[in-house]
Length: 142
Ligand code: CMX
Image (cartoon, rainbow, N blue to C red; front, side):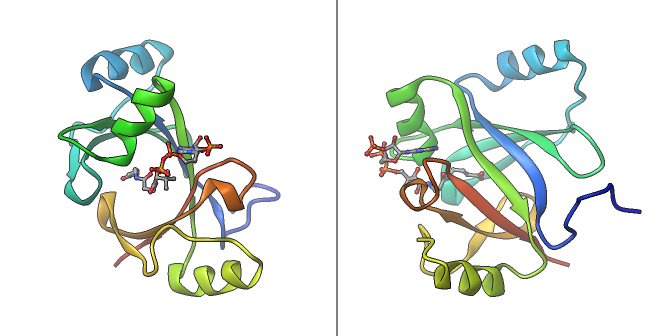
């Protein structure tokens, strides 16, 4: 049974935190009591390595560590330092959700959804159209 108030068509999947050293950051969050998946994933399209730890039955902390030159997370850390980078919401159909949200005035970073971490189809709402919060919507592919 879903917790009261949880909308199965849009619920928090992860809070992404930009970090400059994955091992150091992971130890910090482990000290809080979180357990990370042993597998890390390199997301080449985004120039990041990711590590996930579950918070509850749906939500996770995602650590995002940039590599190489020119990625969004590297630029974010250079400008702001480490910190919360975006919120990700799980939806059943990312393309349908994009259509709905565009009708409501939200602007997406990518014209079409792209592949993200964990075999998910994703897109990002530009923070300028969502009150200063970078929001990812994500559909898990079968
Ligand atoms: N949260 C909130 N606001 C943000 C932001 C963030 N993470 N990143 C940038 N911004 C704001 C900046 O503060 C800036 O605002 P002002 O103009 O008021 O100063 C504005 O957006 C432009 O920022 P910028 O530093 O000039 O950066 P860019 O425009 O080059 O890029 C963005 C910003 C959102 C378009 C880019 O980060 C992007 O394309 N993001 C989507 C992809 C992504 O984030 N990938 C990493 C995650 C990968 C994963 O989870 O696998």
